[in-house]
Image (cartoon, rainbow, N blue to C red):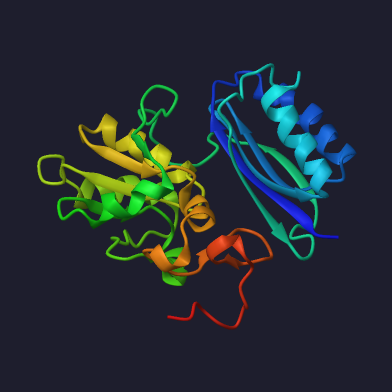
Length: 250
């Protein structure tokens, strides 16, 4: 049976996140789901996998069920498939942040950059006045990125704020477009830059995964593969698992 994989996140106020952990774990276990879920005061983030009907039930519960009482009504979901279960077990963990940046001023529930749909991304990053930033870790960038994107050369996302402080200037870099795997890191990075006085900040809605799903390969500005944090390792256009020993044919 084909395994369905669901990557998801939403920044939302969850002051009761500690109390949500066990009910959410029990719900996932009841559906025989495996993967990792992070809960924090600022929201939820995770990737889980299981039978297609179980994933559908999980997604419905997050957005419409009693567990979160309608607070996850703007959930960012990306669905793909795997030939085998890509996770060994289920983990539901409590964190200070669902994606760690370490900047209290970066609050996507208060302000965030402008979302750009996948179909509009090529035009934005092709504009000569746009600085295109890859907000992922260096080893991810090495596997694939967009043409012309700047690699901050960071080992972890928490280092992005140091890169921004040292290399970015709101008076010089007036139009910034950022991207990441699923959207969560660049969403928080955009909040960070707005808090620092950058006026025009954009980010790819749904991240690289949404772009690879929606944009035909013949029109794509993406080069290489997209690293994913599970046993599939990397995905290509159409969110297809790629041959682990070969890259994209140019």
